[in-house]
Length: 455
Image (cartoon, rainbow, N blue to C red; front, side, top):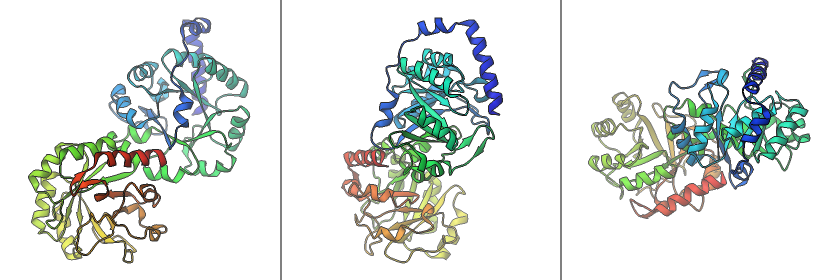
């Protein structure tokens, strides 16, 4: 596959040079004014988010491809935006590159199979601030020629490698940013252990990027100890809800619980939350009714979770159906019989989450009909929102972590430690409030900023 692509690119460059000579092209371009390297050197994990219509391994990834809308949706979560420009194999174009560059303020990477310096200048002509150079495509002489021109045009270079030999070449070529591609374009096979296996060979002063096959925040968390950044394309292109997927990839599944106003739901969503908790249990100081919930939901397209405690099944069903809840969360130690009766009456898309105490022995398996567990402090006289946590050390080797959310006392003082438990999500409530049910917007902003800069 890759050899065919390289052959196509050489023919394409020859045709383009007949239309515009390299000398004329170089006279027409000006240096970039957006610093690719500086964008990657800031604190925290860095994200290169890719506009990608087609993949050689999977075919077309989405039917529509509103390139400008996609790029503008990516921008708040992206340190750099990558744009596929290869037409034959990826349905890309340089027009896409130009459009994205005109509508975003972050550096833009031209993602193509570059075989000659001419393409470096062409990428810059259409607005690229950086280029991809693949060592599976280029010999050292051609790489250095492309590198020299890129530096002259103040463009960054992302150097891609797929094996130890290419990594050693990248080191000798003094590549500043190296991407480890989990996918081998010769065979189109995916090896998600490639970053880990090559890690001992990583040069110390080089910025390392993981690329391909990254679909969840758990993928990011697993590779974070080895790399500075992540290049993500396919997961976004295939997503049915890109806005939610962006938030999950960047921050993980963060639930802001105890919402009582549309202003708070909107603010939570804008800063990175994907889940919103609506408490219907009468014993909670944050309890709301159906009409209030409908107004809260109008504030933002979060995935909403209704929190209940020992309430009549018909009430739970009515609320879940009316609000089209993503999940119901049972917080009243409901019996297995109650849950068995509830499940067939709920919409199929509505999950059931069940709260368990972090102070008690954790279950060995998920109970029947339960999709996720909420591991909480579980004060005997209060439904959540206690502001107190339990000993998280017991979660270190808990085998159901990917089916659990951590609750109870998660806040600014321990948010980084909470992310390190590697549970499927975090459930945050009282620690980001002014008073029960009234969220503190500054604390919400600081919370997501801390996650962004430290995870």
